[in-house]
Structure formats: structure tokens, C-alpha cells
Amino acid sequence: ETGVTQTPRHLVMGMTNKKSLKCEQHLGHNAMYWYKQSAKKPLELMFVYNFKEQTENNSVPSRFSPECPNSSHLFLHLHTLQPEDSALYLCASSGLAGGDTQYFGPGTRLTVL
Amino acid sequence: GQNIDQPTEMTATEGAIVQINCTYQTSGFNGLFWYQQHAGEAPTFLSYNVLDGLEEKGRFSSFLSRSKGYSYLLLKELQMKDSASYLCAVRPNAGNNRKLIWGLGTSLAVNP
Image 1 (tube, rainbow over the protein chains, first blue to last red):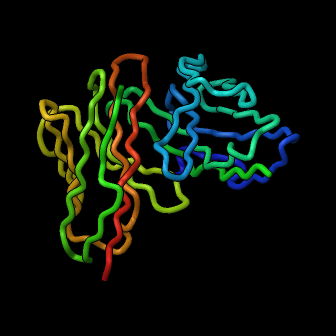
Image 2 (cartoon, rainbow over the protein chains, first blue to last red):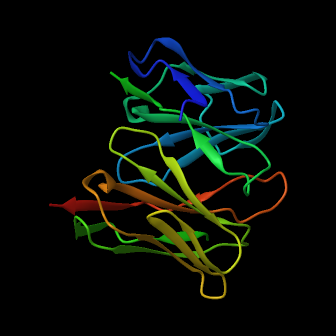
């Protein structure tokens, strides 16, 4: 499935760095999501954007800052992260068909030193 | 609270049939999803159930009973490539509230 792409695929950063994750969907969907996946935990929803408007912020720390300039692009800006933020960050998109099925990108494996 | 329960691990033999169960307790119900996730990769969509009954899609089938808060994913003619984690997720709300409640996933090992 190449409908949702993410860059970079791997990222190592120090706690004082600033970096951004990028997601792009080519499926004509109107909703985009950021998830965090850590070992031994369920997928954690971070943010939801619906037609470019943020509709969900799941009590995410302010060191994570999302940006959605249009329905096809989603960014996650990272600043002063902690080692416990190391995880797989997944982007997904969905449309209105098929029960609003979410389709995932390949993810960014983030390591915070 | 909202909760999804799945077995943590399962083992099966190549060529066999395996059933992965999922039970849920959620504030509402507007669909149940199954995803497959290979190690180090993203989840890929397998099936969606919103009405009671069995949905068949090739070697994979998914069943839903809303009254029992129960679903299962049935994998037939198992292949080695089916070794993966299988995630169950429920959408409690309709409309623009698109949040899913996710289970921890069931790690399936298929042995020769």
C-alpha cells in the first residue's frame, strides 16, 4: 500500500533537537491521524485532522506540534523530546467509505537519545 | 472505561485454521476493524464489520456479534507469511468523531 507515505523512515535525535515528521496521502481522504506505537501498549491516538481542522488532541504534550496545511499533508514537529518518546510514529488517513477505514503509512522509527 | 481484549499470543501450524478472538466493552458501537501488522511495519487493513454475521475475504473471514460484544478473525490455510500481530479496533462513535479504541494485538506464530 503506497497510498500513505511518511518521511523519514528512521530518525535519531537528541533531546535539544528540533525535527519534523512528514506524512502525505494520495487516497483523496479527508481525515488524517498521528499515532504513537510503543512496545506492549495499544496504538495511542495523538491527533486527528478532519478537512484540515484539528478535531482531536489526545492530551499530547506540547513538545509535539502537529500541522495540517491541506487534506493531503500532515506534519509532526518535534522539540525537546524525552527518551520515553522513542517509538514508532504512524500516520493514517481515512475517507467516508467503508466505515471510515484508516490506512496507515510505513511509520517513522524515532529514537531520542 | 473502554476496553478491547485479545489473546496475547497464539501458535498454529502451516496449512491449519486459526481463530483469533476479540471482545470489547465500549461506550457505543459503529464498526469493528481487523488489521495485520508484521514486525517493524505499519498495520494493514484486513476487514470491517458493522452488522452481525460473517464477512469472508479469501483466506480470511471476520465474524461479529454486537449483542455479545464479540468478534473473531478466522485465518484458513495458514502460510508462514501470516506470522504477524493481529489488531482488533472498535469505533465507538459515529459522525466526525473518528477515534478508534485499539486492542494490544495478538501475536500469531505460524510454524512449519
